[in-house]
Image 1 (tube, rainbow, N blue to C red):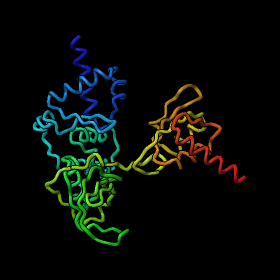
Image 2: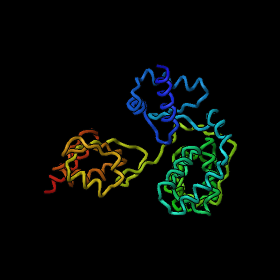
Image 3: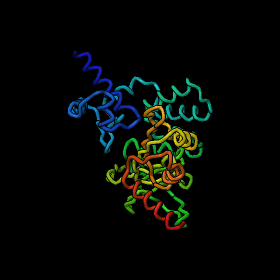
Length: 300
């Protein structure tokens, strides 16, 4: 029935406009779609005027699509007002269900996930707002008077900002002069100027990830572990952020597919509970463990 097809199209549209990123496989499994039908729908959305974005391996529909611009016209809050509301809600410390719902609605309507969903410091509001606009519009900015403790200099930097991090205290950028991705602290900037230049190096942008073991890096590996009850309990208690990666397999076993930036943290976890953990996936991690075990054997 056409009604069923329309419902599937609307559900796909909702998935692609959520702030969570989905791969093609995620979408197909969630909506019971074939890859062929998914690509057909994506092309249909493009022809209908939606800006379908594919930042490998994720798909989403950008909020600057004409449809969403028309929708914005009937929403009474400007983006500046929405940011202010989000700041106020964060600063109240109220974690009630009603406040969480309001935050979620603001995040979805205005792309406020860019702000990292944490309290903004008043003295940094201008810088954060400028970065927010630059990221949304894919614009270049000048960091005015950036103080670098490494080089012991104060200088201007021209960058392509693409991710606000750590409670909006840091911003991930591609620096044009060095052709490198760098993380800058907002507290070290005298000012931020939005330039009339658009990104030209988006393919070179690399996010800085932080895994559940608090190791950071541009690259991630997916380590899959099959764990018993003890290891699962330890992982949940010591690393609460792991919960969303854990799935129960049977009465006594749980599987965790963990994206990690370093093998140090997950390695310590596995070696400390080796009798209750089986490494199912990631050949590089298996090689790392074998090397660690050989070194331990040579010491004892």
